Image 1 (cartoon, helix red, strand yellow):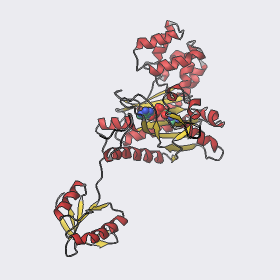
Image 2 (cartoon, rainbow, N blue to C red):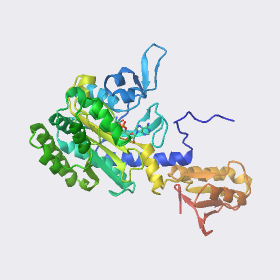
Image 3 (tube, protein in one colour):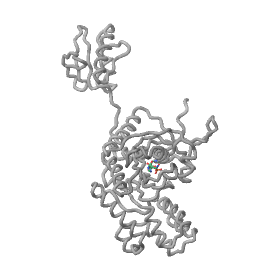
Image 4 (cartoon, rainbow, N blue to C red):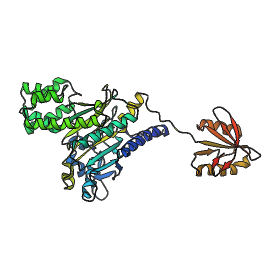
Amino acid sequence: MAKGALPGFRDFYPQEFAERDYLLKHWRDVARRFAFVEYDGPPLEPLDLYTKKSGDEIVGQLYNFTDKGGREISLRPEMTPTFARMVAARANALRKPVRWFSVPQLFRYERQQKGRLREHFQLNVDIVGEVDVAADAELLSVAIEIVRVLGLTQNDVRARISDRRLLRALLATLGVSEEQSGGVFAVIDKIERQPLDISREKLSALGLADGVVERIIGLTGRVSLDGLRAEYGADAAVNECLGELGRYFDCLDALGVGAWAELDLKIVRGLAYYTGIVFELFDAHGEFRAICGGGRYDTLLKSLGGVDLPALGFGMGDVVLGELLRHRGLMPATLAGPDYWVAYSEPAQRAEAMRVSQALRRAGASVEYALRPQQLGRQLKAASAAGAPEAVILREDGTLILKSLASGEERTVRLSEGRLV
Ligand code: HAM
């Protein structure tokens, strides 16, 4: 028996391909409506593009090898470093803000589980050259518009928003040092996936007093801008971050997506390069992994390409989104049959059937016919099985009949400039 694909890799049979195509078409359509233009980069990159800045989590998942020229190489696990490299290389010539999107296939050696494979397609939408929080809001509204056009509502999907600068400032008011804050971020990032007592133990192990541990746990619960202002607003850095976030939420309201969004300081993001507002989209019941994630990474272009430009973006994968849509009965993609099946009564008419088919095809229709001469009845059965709504039947006397395969209704037609009239 033939062996299957590698674990975590998918075969896209035509039905699965149609579903993938359905998602990717909507991604491209929405990104273009928001005035983003498409780009792509190489699927292989120098290994150090990722080891420098992406963070340990993703570096542990690289598909890397030494190529025949002795270069250290990796399949791309994410698009952001490639994007940052490309933009930095032409930074002066590009119109700002840069608004680009891409739909790469990405590769991560992950443990295969629900929502996680070793390859996936990921829409990346990024903006470079804008510090205003309106850019952060614009990006989130792209992600929300995608799930909205796919049939999901604010009751199905929630945007959970945090700000790494705010969290850092809050931790500073609690006396958490710079060295400790990395560890605290890591614990908060995992807090929903492990028992609370384990998180408490890990925070204590960082050398934090019990009272501080409880305040940190409190921050990861239900919070609001007003609540945080009342409790921590005396601190200037916290107050400034809260002001920025307030303006961000105002922009979300103006864009009509405020009702999808909530402040949630548990959202840290696994990648190391984020510097400001970060967000993830989740299904409202919390049954699936993140649908998408992103945020601001204002220092990445400088460290990868020496160009000091603020940047932000998000990635949305096809795996979780596909699972969620199928679960909700919102995956309408089916295999489309041909528009017409051209059938012929006599074997000798095959050449004429070819001529008719080509004329229809050149005018834009999708057309199939029996490659090997068959009885008319079998041809019409094949036409139905292929999903063609109509058959064009070439009678012995040369007339053309258009037959609806659903109702059986027939009418005589003729071909005029590739159209049946
Ligand atoms: P990420 O959170 O690693 O971010 O991935 C973004 C999304 O891609 C996830 O929310 C998930 O839907 C999907 N995804 C990631 N890994 C897998 C996997 N192994 N299997 C299936 N789906 C997966 C990034 O990659 C950032 N570079 C996104 C970004 C763009 N940030 C700024 N610009």
